[in-house]
Amino acid sequence: MANILVYALHYEGAINKNSLGAVSEASKLAGAIGGEAHAILIGDGAADVAGQLGNFGAKKVYTADAPAGLAQPAIDAMAKVIGEGDYKYVLFGGGLLGFEIGAGLAARLGAGVAMEVTAVRADGGELIAERPILGDSSISEIKFRSPVGIIIGRLNAFEAVEGGGDAAVESLAVELSPQAGQATLRTRGEQRGADVDIEGADILVAGGRGLGKAEGFELCDQLAAAFGGNSAVAATRAVVDAGWYPYAAQIGQTGKTVAPKLYLAAGISGAIQHKVGMQASENIVAINKDSNAPIFEFSDLGIVGDLNKILPKLTEAIKAKKG
Ligand SMILES: Cc1cc2nc3c(=O)[nH]c(=O)nc-3n(C[C@H](O)[C@H](O)[C@H](O)COP(=O)(O)OP(=O)(O)OC[C@H]3O[C@@H](n4cnc5c(N)ncnc54)[C@H](O)[C@@H]3O)c2cc1C
Image (tube, rainbow, N blue to C red):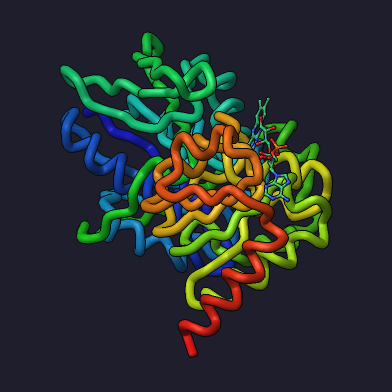
């Protein structure tokens, strides 16, 4: 059998969206290589949510009694499952913890690892991972020589698909390695803005350095509020690095990847590292005072002008239209 094990993250009774995507993807791929998709959930509350993964295609779910939110206990638990089972691949939905666990697991098992993977396909009973390289201008294909291949997706690379069946749930006793006791999770905090679901928003009003200062984001906040509904504010790395807006809102290569119905970019130059995080948006509208700004090359509508004048007018127009 060529089974695939998926690390699934859960918190406060909900399973992470990217983990659900990874389980669905693993289910599809396992079918193509003649195996099953299994998943592992770590920590308190795992048993309460484990059954949900059957609906996304998992045939078996392990619930491990180990501290959640830390890499080493997860590595211990996953290494045990892989050592006792018949696994050819391990799949992660992405995220910093996923990277940490995946890298540690690769070191523990002597396995190959592919990170920031955007697509996986089955070919002759094996999986081939596709990974963008050189600022996303090319795709490299990765095939594994090691007995177990570890694949870590880019956030949002895998779509969660419901319609599976039931999963067998098995609790797992884990003997933690000495290094697992070296760190404890003291608090799990949320960044300011982390409660905003940027990845799920239909409309994103994104601000860049052209806003001039942190207070400039008020213009974006006001426009997003005027749109109402499922709208949110996003940002470039330049402005989050400057402390003008929370990191949770960063779009791009080292931030989030989004595909809203409307992406309105205000004062954003359109650097390749930003573009890769928003180019899949259905409609891109850019406001920039420089008619030669690169963002106009991939915008559906470009407005050349001063955002300080255009954004308030746009906000008023949207409010007026909404009555
Ligand atoms: C390894 C690496 C990873 C990176 N990852 C990311 C990432 O994930 N996300 C990301 O965004 N960037 C990332 N970057 C940074 C990226 O290269 C750019 O520096 C950044 O995107 C630029 O942000 P910006 O468009 O806000 O600023 P700028 O490039 O400075 O652009 C500001 C724009 O505002 C316009 N402007 C100025 N005033 C006004 C006005 N009054 N009205 C209208 N327009 C105005 C200007 O004409 C200009 O085009 C990364 C870089 C590296 C090297």
